[in-house]
Amino acid sequence: MPKNRRKKRRANRPSNSQEPPSTTLESEQEAARGWRSRLTAVRVGIATILIAVLGSAGYGLITWLGPDVVDSPKIKDTIRAAAKDPDDITHTVRYEDPGYQVALPTGVAMPGRVRTCLKNWTYESLSDETLQPGHCRFDRIVSQLRTMGAATPNALNLVITLEGHRSQRIKIDDVRPVNIQRRPPYAGAFLDIGPEGPGETIKMFLDLDELNPRARTVTGEEGGYEPGGLWFQDNTLFLEDGKEEALNIKAGTSRDAVTFDIQIGYRIGTEHKQLVINDSGRQFALTPINCVADGRASYGEVWSIQNFRSIDPVKRPERWRTFEC
Image (cartoon, rainbow, N blue to C red):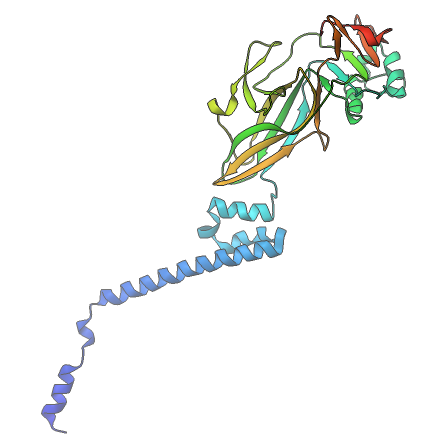
């Protein structure tokens, strides 16, 4: 081949020295970023599948996934929900009524063991923690009567403590009674051990006389609280991870005996959820005093404390004199 033709061909070939070195470096960096993003996406996909399949073992994926995935609060919550913390919110319930007053439904009598306990009660037994025969603890009696369906008269004070278990902040949107059942006022046995004085700390009111009760603010003074405006119109409530918030709730009724659960409506991110709370599987119970005339109520039996020295049955419980009517 002639030398001049070979020279032409060599001249037409692209020279490596003509391409800027930075172009190759940028291409390699771009390819590396693409691989990292694809690896992250693959890890997230695999994590979601493994969490669903492995359940509690999924919490061990955190180390393998790496901070680029696990630092997302939403991904953390997905892992926690499947493995470590299945509940967004845990709760406890405590009765905070200032006295010991409960009424059983019509036809339900006071148990014989409770009657004996009340007959033998003395002021000195208040300091006796041994619960030997002949001694009573009011809280134990009230708890036993509630298992039989007893309701608190007129108003019920509750402290519901909520604790968040999510990396994302939980916003409480609503508190309201649900699964409401209404019936005539209870008129069975009545235990009347009233409070010595006011002792309420109330922040939220549930008026069960309303057709659609919702959480309301509290107006008035201690001992005479009344429902005000809607609580969540003027207040906000958030749950932080591992921290507690206490709801001091007063629920009241003046017309019907009512049993109900309490529903907490909340949000995590854009997801709306609900938590239904009751008394260890039993509904909360309220009843008005069964008034039959001005100053008189009617019950199957009434046990009332006398001068804080003894607890005795009322002689005519069907015409019981009380300031509640």
